[in-house]
Image 1 (cartoon, rainbow, N blue to C red):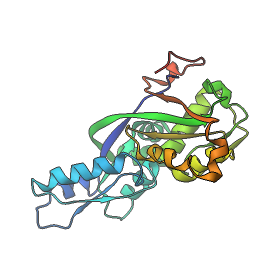
Image 2: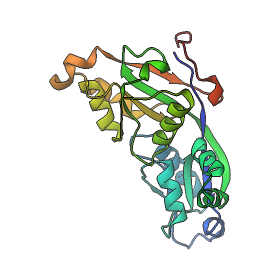
Image 3: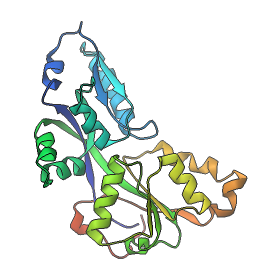
Length: 238
């Protein structure tokens, strides 16, 4: 298994409106929390938080989203989205940005607590053994604006890998593209277990995917300490 880079999932609160919403009484409208797509781990964590909050009289409305960047955007809007689950590298990207507006957005967000270690999952053609093998390949980075998309961009930039094509697709569309041979690899950032990949077993039994199924595998699903630990060669099998 290749060892790549670790990101934390963070629960954030918008500075404007968020703290007031947290202090509101039980008779107020539910407080919105933007999480992630319906096949990811974030929305499940959001539902668990909402259940616990309910026991102390706090109503939280869990909302599906397109990912971390979408969550930040919605927390900054007039939408009822006081809380959001965001990848730590997204928050870091905003904080370090040369764009003053991006840094200002980051300054208006407050960390409530770190959630869990997210992992970068790479579902790819079996010919891809190490990160450098992604050079000149067709890569699905995730939906534009998602945490997976930004993490993929960061990893490619840090390693100097230049794909032949970089495609934005939803997770299920990405899995389908890899299985059909229309893409060589897909990235997905989330915590295990991931319901998305449990569906792969069902897909490979379908005639349209059967001829390619044996050529695909999870060639990397790693925990990452920092960007400097990106491996250029295979680690010990996991």
